[in-house]
Amino acid sequence: MKAAVIHAPGAVSVETVPDPAPGPRDVVVRVAACGLCGTDLHILQGEFAPSLPLVPGHEFAGEVVAAGREITALHPGDRVAVDPSLYCNECRYCRAGRNNLCERYAAIGVTTSGAAAEFAVAPAANCVRLPDHVRTEDAVLVEPLSCAVRGYDVLRAPLASHVLIYGAGTMGLMMLELAKRTGAATVDVVDLNPDRLRAARALECTGAAEAAAEFERPRGWDVVIDATGSQSAIQDGIGRVARGGTYLQFGVADYAARATIEPYRIYNQEITITGSMAVLHSYERAADLFAAGVLDPDFFISDRLPLTEYPHALDRFRAGRGRKIVVVP
Image (cartoon, rainbow, N blue to C red; front, side):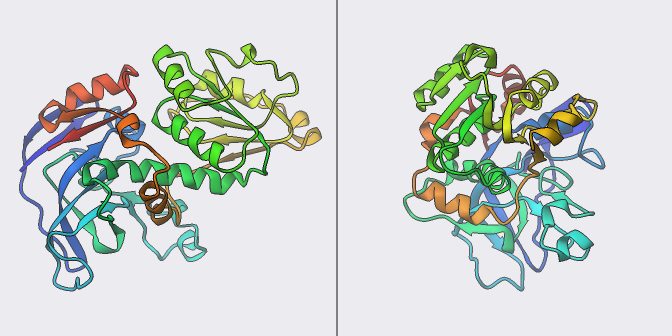
């Protein structure tokens, strides 16, 4: 089969690799579409993945074409979206129900072969069947949406919160949609990219600007979300949290990124600084939300490129062009 392969930091190519075979509790999925994510760029630069070469791709959906001998609930022809998370279910965090903090955390397309390929292997337990009205190639959005749902689980934002989101890429826009649906009074969005600001306005954010200083909110925001991973955005965002508010680190920062906090202010103003790591008991809920129409896939998916153009797709994503970019085998 054809697959994108990262051989070394900065080196990716599309080539022929052996077809996958399912284990006893696995299925083989013919990939309908695979989304690109900031995590893929981190892997390309040598972070996250424990070993290379690696077939990336953790946002995907497709059709089951083969099932392991112990699988009875899925059959060839079933259309599924796939949660890429792989947990040990044995460590202290898994046993406490915090599997996304698993000491042996792994994920399809991050630590094991992924879906930037014609076929991918996944545990049957990670597959969610798609309803008839959902197009398989659109269900690639379920995984990033499940991360956004997890972010809002962490936030537990009260009704009528004033929300500030840094970043109007796919994840920032998803957080915008969830903020609107969870009772935010206002949702402001910051981004340096004019096209992305236009996208945020199209989704009816309250305000969109290149800098938070352009908004008239001297007391700050109840909820500040970084969806960029940018050190400068993170530093600015922490300073924009209102008294009693919450800052959520949602974007994936480089390992070397650093930010300065003011401990007295954190104490005196009862500010919460927290993070949201990947997916936790949120994938099925995201699939339900997606099926209910919480996102418009024709708006969110801006580019559908052939798998053979995977290196170009990465370059386009790195340059901040478009919204969700997917490759289609």
